[in-house]
Image (cartoon, rainbow, N blue to C red):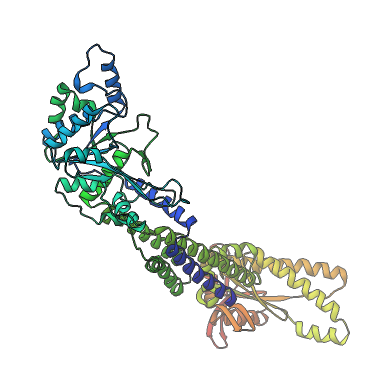
Length: 617
């Protein structure tokens, strides 16, 4: 037992340390599992409402189809020219910008990199430049940082930006990086500012703002969070943001209706193409999102300060935080050894972890390292549960071995249905029982004579046959053999389990009657075999007695003690004086009076007890 307990606590300490180490160090396989949990938590949280200031103008499938329809007509309106395929004419972007800003939009970001002169000619560039001049410092254009194609050559990073447009305007253009570090299987997507403010300087390049950051700057809006440190908090599946198809902005008739519904004054607008077939974009917990929606997510997170934060950042702090619920479970287990208390502690720890994790995500947009703590608590629950189960099995075996020495197997099964009660029986308690004493009359003289005659084997064989028959009768009536005292049999009815005082007293009297009948049958058999017959006396008493294990650590017996036991023994001796095979006390006689009427045998002085009225059949 001691060795097993040491092993259990050693394993518990090891589980706690391993859980803390895994949470702190975040090895790749574990990080992959943690990432899956984080994604599932976001799905359980469900979609969020993004800021209403944001509007997406999508160059989507509907826009391209509308352009294709106009292209088949004899006359194509100026606003629809070249709208049927990508890349779009830059003039169309200029038209979109003019419509949006003219309707009161605060600032517009175009999520398209205009590299070099337009393929559709100088007039196309001129149309866009005209609108940029009209709306100075209201439009941010996209730039892109190209990574080296061959890492072995050591090629530098290349910034692709609309230099020719800036040259034509003779002034710097507001630009922002469109680069997004996508999420991987084990790493969440970071805010685009992380790329421009952290990764670029780490590579030796100048820091650059993201497209969304410059959009906020032009709109004179401030981010409510440290963007480079945050992760993207996706608002849900595609379609969460306010959106409008680009053709509806370009079509004058349609725009007159749509603009009123959109409530554009003060809006921040992102314009750009989206995947027509739904296969592009970036993977998120809610499915794939277009690059335009991911850029909008970054801007929205900055506006409402809802970017996710992995906390704690320090490995030591993560490990300590993970250990906290495990240590609490260990403390409870140290104070309480029962299985129920330990499992309740583990269940409460899991509930606390779940509540803390979900509430931190919902209200503080903090992602806690919950997986290691939860797995550690479950492992401790299994460990302590297994230990308690083994301990319970060992205790059941001990109780079974103890009670099987005294009672029938059916009674043992009933006792073991409640091990705590069984343990209480062994420790001792007061019970109302009926005690039966049965002794062979003249057995001492018979033993002396047979010993002198060398008939000890015969004598013991006859005695064992008698005792076996008496035990069989007592057990059949639900009695428990307490002990043998030479030729005397002591039995108890109502211990360790009671069927009720009246039922136990009646069973005891019926057993005494059956014992006499069984002895008569044995005597008839022994007469045929030439053996001397036995005559016995039976004393019965009902009352309260102390029941439990009595003895030394080397030898314990489950027995009953008290005045009721002494009275039953004295009544058995009194049968020789009254000359009757059975005597019972008044309590027993009263309990069985309806079933077995008994008659008084007078009042007798019982040593150590006093005057007692006894009854006979």
